[in-house]
Image 1 (cartoon, rainbow, N blue to C red):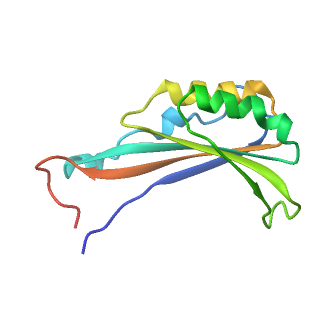
Image 2 (image 1 turned 60 degrees about the vertical axis):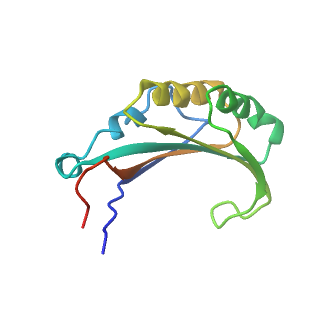
Length: 137
């Protein structure tokens, strides 16, 4: 049976108190796993940004930033255990084949826009067997 190794990092920050320089940057998480690389497995990186707010107009500037940076954001009305009242969520993702400062700049741009609400972001690895590479059993 094939094993799929997925590493994920989740960091969250309130946009009200977020600073442009985060403690950990997305590009710092987009580093190849040496064990997977030795097996001929390449990694691609999925970088996702999510904003949740009660103020739809307050998150619109961040939606535009995500569109400009190729994240294809989706707007939805939602409620959750952490925010049980009806509110708005914008979520967009972009895949990177290698570590990229573009991901850092996208996060910095969204944080600098100071949109109302809560910002969360994730970097998730997607192992991809290299052409002619070994299997990941």
